Image (cartoon, rainbow, N blue to C red; front, side, top):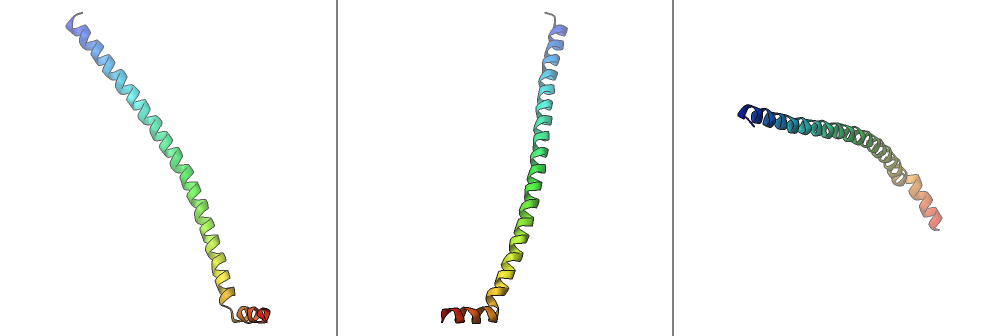
Length: 78
């Protein structure tokens, strides 16, 4: 093999490897974006649930701290 042929073969191998690495990078990037999108929707659902539960806790706190509730509780004890 001549020197020029050897250089061409080496360049082709290097570019082949770089091409394969670039494709793997693009696949990984696509998976990451897909994962982030699904995580974002899950985060949105969880935030809505937290807000809903916070509102329910506030209502329960109002009921329990209400004087009428306390009187009714005392009456039921008798």
